[in-house]
Image 1 (spheres, rainbow, N blue to C red):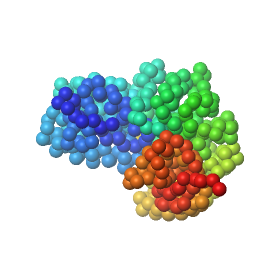
Image 2 (image 1 turned 90 degrees about the vertical axis):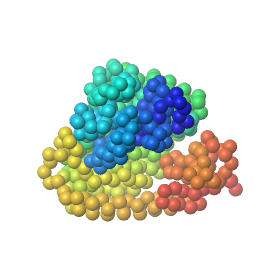
Image 3 (image 1 turned 60 degrees about the vertical axis):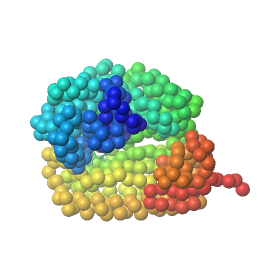
Image 4 (image 1 turned 180 degrees about the vertical axis):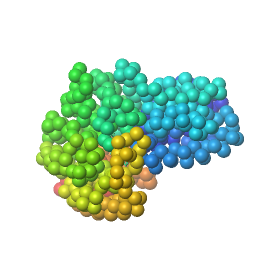
Length: 447
Ligand code: 5AD
Ligand code: SF4
């Protein structure tokens, strides 16, 4: 995506933190600023404009933003024409305050203000400092859904909804991303058809809670029907989606796993905790046994389905027994991979006011033990794949460049020696070795 900067263009250095939604927004930022003559550069030293697209889901992600800004302070002193801007979730949360806190920041744009960025940059070029963090109305939002740009890749993310109405008690997302909104089904299908025409083979439907897609908009398809329509598009060989909420997994969606071979055998289904008491405090809207029943139903529909998840350790009031319940959930589900986090107190959220906040030491010990156990489980699952034949979509050259790389149906990276003409094709691979972060395979030969 990086291009040479000529005398007529200006350099844009964009740093993206956090989730895939931010990655997607960053693509949009690059294309919006092309219109003003900015081109992406790989090094802040080459930049006329530095933008940080930020995440505030945990305090650590937020403080990282200030660390990065600190690094750019000297650059700004040496080059007063350099423009520094902050967007994304920290920008939404802080707004004007950021301009006061960090005097060398020129512009702040919130999660609903991407489309105003060119205007803000033009103002900054004239020396004006501005912050825009207003939430916009539904109709305007619907017309501003980011379309993915053409990156030439075989696998692409497609945003189908944004925002969240769930208000899990620990989570800042509803405050910084706003209310849930579903993109128009026709627009999603048109974008995917167009992608398929350009050679995209796999798409991942993206949103904070994709399972509630369309529920607030009777004129749009429901999530399961959307998947069915996508599966009928020629050229699209694989469909994935993220992130799911266990409470909103419908019987129709479960049926998709039984009936649609293009739908990959993997679901990211965050449990957050294995204790009913903690789940209730978190306002998750399901119990441990309901969560496990959903996993079981999904696995009945698609035997061998890989489940990945998120867990928060050290939620306020989490007892030793609650924590043990989470550990035992790992044994019951046998997650293929697990993202686990220390509970982090976030402004505005209900849980920040809950009693029983735990010490850092207790939280850290619990997290370390949980992560050790999960590493073993992941290892066991990967080792168990050795000798099996996996269908792999070959996406390109491996990082070291001497092999091809792709992912299994369950989303595990596989490296395999083979001819580059296989890039873009689905092939059968025999797994011959498992490493901590990838599998090694060889082309499958029958007989
Ligand atoms: N503290 C720790 N982890 C959090 N997450 C969201 N909010 C918090 C918080 N306050 C985690 C959840 C979510 C993932 C994206 O981040 O596990 O699923
Ligand atoms: Fe946050 Fe809960 Fe919404 Fe996920 S479902 S974004 S954890 S509020």
